Amino acid sequence: MRWLSKFIYFKLLGWKIVGNTNFSKDTIKKAVIIAVPHTSWHDFYIGILLRKIVDIKVNFVGKKELFRWPFGLYFKAVGGRPIDRTPGQNKVENIVKLFENEEEFRLALAPEGTRKKVDQWKTGFYYIAKAAKVPIIMFTLDFKNKQNKISAPFYPTDDKEADFRFMKAFYKGVVGKVRAYS
Image (cartoon, rainbow, N blue to C red; front, side):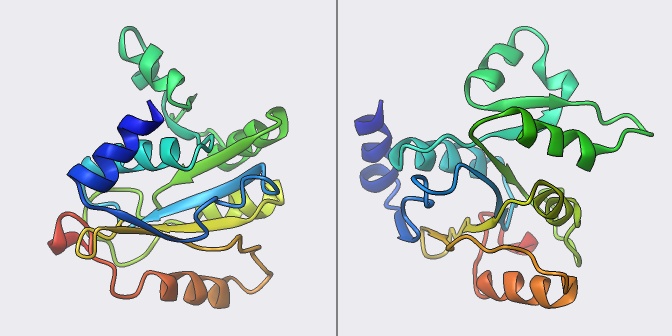
């Protein structure tokens, strides 16, 4: 399947990978990977192809309802983990437990929290990384340049504002599939 993923990603779609092309997979077994901008369902298959190409295990979380029969089997097979999103649940705490219970767990999230244009990122990914004591790896979904740029691991500090400025600077000029939402 890896050769097929490479053929589709590189030859048919014309994409390229820039930066930390191995996601530091040999040394970083746990991380929060933030994918920006998240503007379309197309982001999902680009991510699935990329992780097959670089041969890295990447997980995601979704509302528990997505993991029902028959789609639940597929979502679990591609690294999905169900979470309870009903009010009153501490989602950050529950996701940190996933990091504690897994030997290898790289969690991909979209800090926008939606595929629509937002003025501010949600902060859950940041607090998950801090509480789990794992780095954040930044990952672009740049449809303008047809590239995925991947950062070196970044460990959040105690200066949230500076950390967010640093992370947002990584995405400057990146254009998503739906340009109006980038």
